[in-house]
Amino acid sequence: MGPVKIGIVGAGGMASYHFEGFARAGAEVVAMADKDTGRAREFGEPRGIRRFYAGLGDMLSGSPEIDAVSVITPNKFHKPLVIEALEQGKHVYCEKPPALNAAETIAMQEAAERAGKILMFDLNNRARPEAKAIMYYIKNGKVGKINSAQATWIRRNGIPGFGGWFTNKAISGGGPLLDLPHMFDLALYFMGYPEPDYVLASVFNDFMGSRAFKGPWGIPDLKGGVTDVESACHAFITFKTGQCLMVRSSWAEMNEREVVSVTFQGQSSGGKIERLFDIDGLDGTSIDNCAVFTEENGCQVDYHIKVEKDEQMGRVTQAVNFVDAVTGKDAPLNTPAQAVIMMKLVDAMYESAAAAKPVKL
Image 1: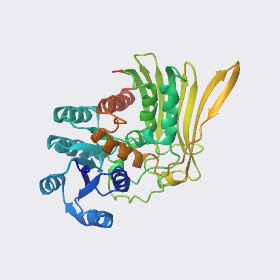
Image 2: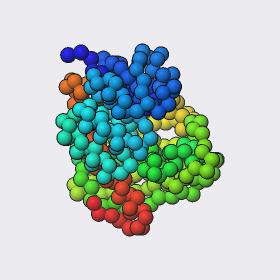
Image 3: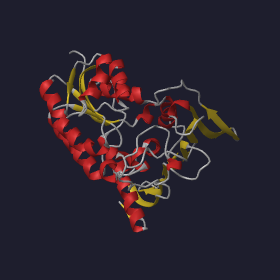
Image 4: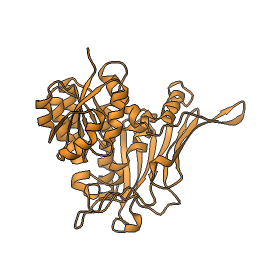
């Protein structure tokens, strides 16, 4: 069996991480599709990609040897592209969030089951060295059952443009809750993805029109565009296991600095994984911390865990894992069933906020 052959849909900012991970795992990216074929060529030709198409259908017809498809598009297009690729018998690696809502995610899960193919999402923070280190302690019984956790991604000024697809709910599905799901997913991952029970949430959009809260990424504004998503969401979730989770997510909120962390309290030990920034919103400046808090011999003991710094923040390693899952070398780091739970919770947060009361799942 030769190398896994992959086609990438979308030449956006995440494409370089997908490509590097696939190449590192020994896969071959043989084609690329983007409605702007010039942008696809600009990305692909220096990396040895030789075939370019305007869409997924053309790519699958023109390059039938493709084994797997990578989807890197605005959120609205995840479901149709993923299902089309699965129905053509391809494994799929899709950018986060999985889709616009839980119903779309369920449809994707069912398509993967019918096709008997791997479907994974780029929830890359699970692949970070810090997360792997924390999971070692959890899996080896050091932590015990996690009773409670707090998932936080708070930006002081991080709106990704005004009027573009990020701020348009019909295309994005929502604001920071959909754009920054990583700590939320990571907390659920540490907790064992328990079955949810109740959700109580509030959303705010105070600063969505203020340029003082625009992020530093240079995403152009769209004059006359739509800005109908939240700037912040705060939620409390209870689970049928008795566990609970607090979620804080924002693009723009009066906070001292950007905070990206998961903290948890277990029956034997607690822990924390956190990213610290020299400059708010610039991922390349992140400094990573992780620790386990416990008691030994009647004393409070903190394990400060040192791991190798990962400048790609798990994005490349996650793409490697996808190829290894396709070839049977490793188990997938995330599953469609987990994505469905996450998106059901997202839907419930928006429903609770709109109704101003708890929602039972």
